[in-house]
Image (cartoon, rainbow, N blue to C red; front, side, top):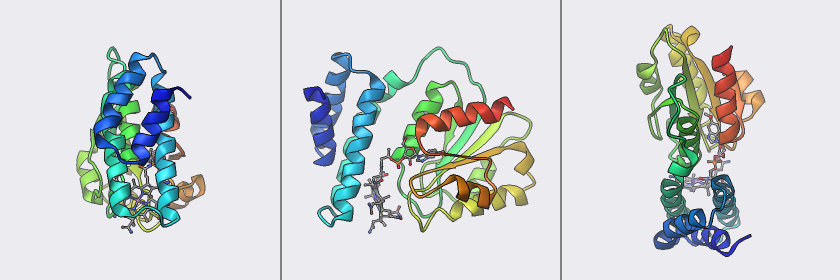
Length: 211
Ligand code: B1M
């Protein structure tokens, strides 16, 4: 791994807010492939998770690493997003109620925009009704739900129920993702698809809207 990539990884793990963004800029200037940089950044967050699990890190450390990661993502975003694409359809996305984890969801947003989708990002801790409000019938629309906690993944079901109760289920495809979520869970709650990472989420949206 090149020096700057290694430093990015360390910068995120150590939550060095000042340095990560400039290192990402440097890595881009050194012609590192944007997805390679992203991969290193994602691995750094997994390492932060491991340190938290082992009791070495607490919530404040996780939070500062997350901020460092987001600072780096802000710099990386233009390199991951092509500018000449036309809107291929609409995706309404958010992290479900009770869940504040938004980095994975933000990655999905960046890559979807890069692939030419109009993305309505509702943020994190999003109530089911907020998703329902943004669905437009008649067009190509996907609702994408993210959850990182075993305690909040069940709120994905609540979103699907609200969409169904509003009579809009036939107008949308619903996809889910996030570390605790599985294909089996997607089937159990009646989602149309599951994806384990942000790149696959884009391919899944492509497939669902093509059918
Ligand atoms: Co928290 N947290 N956290 N956390 N946090 C986890 C998720 C945890 C696994 C850590 C651990 O114990 N090892 C654990 C969950 C355990 C569980 O439920 N099984 C945990 C916990 C327990 C908690 C708190 C409860 C801690 C506490 O307060 N005691 C608390 C809950 C707060 C809340 O949400 N109500 C909490 C808080 C936080 C912070 C706020 C400090 C911070 C989040 C800041 C933010 O997001 N703005 C944080 C962080 C940073 C993490 C870890 C370390 C990193 C998450 C991350 O950003 N990963 C995480 C440990 C880990 O993941 N190993 C952890 C990088 C990101 C790129 O990956 O989000 O998985 P990820 O996204 C992936 C895929 O999952 C997928 O694509 C991405 C990759 O391409 N994906 C989708 C995600 N969404 C998708 C949607 C799709 C498709 C794919 O389509 C719709």
